[in-house]
Length: 212
Image 1 (cartoon, rainbow, N blue to C red):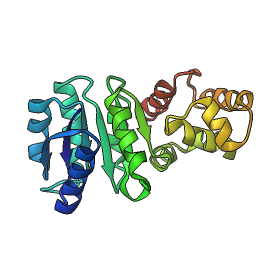
Image 2 (cartoon, rainbow, N blue to C red):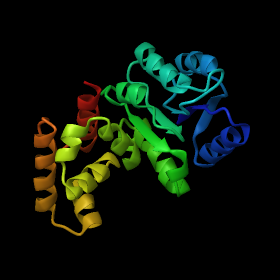
Image 3 (cartoon, rainbow, N blue to C red):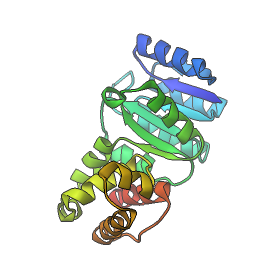
């Protein structure tokens, strides 16, 4: 599985390269700045890109902008954002694009190597991987529907964002699957969205709604 990495910190870039190669990924390019990222993605068309948000020269949102531009040039290009920051504007634009796998993980919240590697594989396979904190920050920018959610519904939507099935959510929260379905239906009703049994589509639907 071919990977392009965009990370400006040399030690982390080298560490990600070694880690992924140890799990049978092939890193075809590892860049340290925004201007180099788009050409690398378009040239190599990797199975998945692991991209930091803030890259040189301005350290603002070059990584996300390059990822969005690359998905325009290469529709469906899987992108996993790995960052310390949540950039709401471009994050919503990237995550609401339903073509190809997408993900957004926060560096300081990735506690296990296996969790990260599984996330990379899931995005490469067309899935969605979201840190609940990212979803929480995106939702917080749209207060009326967020305020309408109960505490339990917020727990459920956070676990949905991790790509968990209804059964997995039920197990995590120690409630029945019927209760989970009821909460999900309520969430989508309050957000003005139709319910869906597809984990990836329902996360993307929420993000698409926020983008709108």
